Length: 350
Image (cartoon, rainbow, N blue to C red):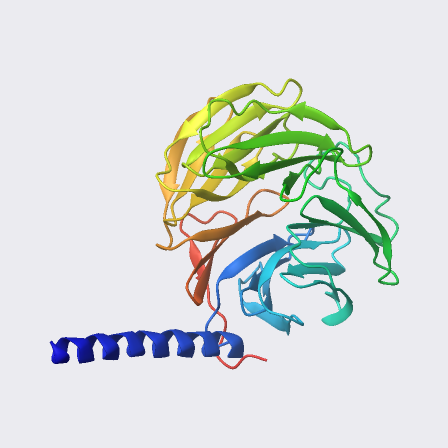
């Protein structure tokens, strides 16, 4: 009995040391921590990844080699976005929002706002001929961020807060912005998902009006993630039970229910207007035809939770971020490639 207790204590202590060592290496850059945020630059030349240790890694998409690294002022990067002129990067952690100059690899501003769930630089849509958003001939001057039902607007030229308002009328604490439509800017979808219930609404960013309530009556558990296509009139959302819904944007009518995932859907993105990719807790990536409501194929580059997905503006490069415990991985499917390639940072790279 004593011997069993000794072995159990030794095993537990060994596991603790391994996890602690992995976390320490992640902070030093030798191992990637959980990768929770991904974004391609609008020109498609760079892929940017953010991890649990606060590391911002910038990769060249022509070689898929690490170009340089930056370190956030705090840990736990949750989401990010790149300005339409490729010059600014915004990353949000649990404790603040930061703006970086990508061209000079330089930190510009920090906004002390907690629990940001989405950041967004308003822009012309980059994968559609339809024009919305700001004049791209001018440098970006505004950043939008959401935190538990509140919309924050910051001036990116001086780092000052411009406005803080409820991001939709009648919003209450706890509701999350899940996706923003660039082709139909300023439309966005917000919702709330729990184990037993949830809702989804499409709203107008400028007027704060709820435009389209999406019919979620078929789903018993709440939504977790959502995505808009480049220019198509639909929106998709993934649920706790692994189901995926596709709705018509004009009527809010449910068009298709896609069922293949056995675990919670944790990330999704459109490769083009009719092709959706979705990821789950087991690391499975399913590909769907949303016009026909049909399953196409499955990929599984790694067997751990998928935190984030990103698609380049031409729809030809796709990235997925994994993470479990203190270790994360990034895989890409480049232009014309048939198999996923893992991106590995060089040990000791500055």
